[in-house]
Image (tube, rainbow, N blue to C red):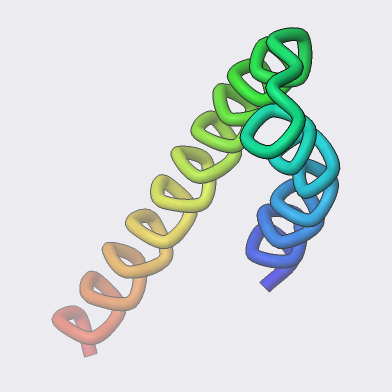
Length: 65
């Protein structure tokens, strides 16, 4: 759950730059958004790997019982 909360906080932090880029037309905000989205992608990948390893662990524990 910690990873999900991190993803949520990262999305919340991007809100100002989203507004600046789309409504005010500030290109520098777009650069910050791209950087933040890349970090978000990395965190999401970490969460996916964690979920997959827990799933496999549960599956192996279940089959060995």
